[in-house]
Length: 366
Image (cartoon, rainbow, N blue to C red; front, side, top):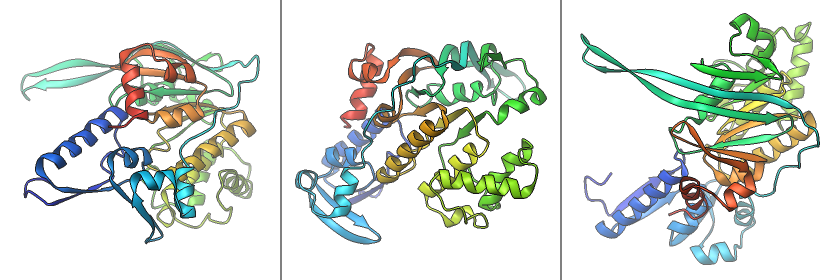
């Protein structure tokens, strides 16, 4: 982008998919380059924290039109347009409901280790080395609880989550679901448990098959798990799941490309809850969404947890969302747990330098 010595650099969501520490590094890099090369920067983003810290002047757009613009400090201090006020009020707020007393354990892991073999050297003389992605991790998740799993990119969060669902095989360790060891179960033995544990992926644009209708996407899990005696019964269950996820029940014949990112994520959530699971792995479900939609998804997840007694493992690099949704949090670095505890305690008074760096980057970007 800088090769032709530009006068203007357009940065289109340059930090959206990055963890908080890398995000701060990229923003500082752009700021330093701006001063060094004396160029203007147009920053396109939905992250208001980034806007507040980085921008001198702000334009707010809605439906292709400019609804408000002002100096950054004035716009944040005294927004005039209803849409701007709604955006500023959309930052993740609130706390999860307190856990009921005497909640049992739904998921437990002891000394789980996940490794990958990496190939080095030449084709004729390959040299295989072991990469430890998850290093002897323990976890305990109670019923009705939301447990946050945070850390920088490459810390092993998603790998650990997939190992807990037996989507990846752990090299060693014990995983118990509802008190039952699942580590040694065959695929056939795992099948009855699959409907009780579900996953919502990060990217709502790639997690839904574009060739299938919404009805087919959600019904597929019911068919595989042999839920519903007739197709009419399954379709009714699909409609109920869509309505519970905040979508109309009459969209079964439509395709994913007809919906926005937030609507697609609601459809992905409907696919998960259609099976009436007890545990859902939420793998960065809000990172690709703008702030107002993000807040709506957080409220939806809270509502579903209250109504259905769900347990969540919430993987994220957005500590603001973690604080709003989670009861406890585990901080990971290089496949290890470096800190864990109640979410307010960990984020307010971090005990390790790594956690402190994550918190500082999340709440005081750049």
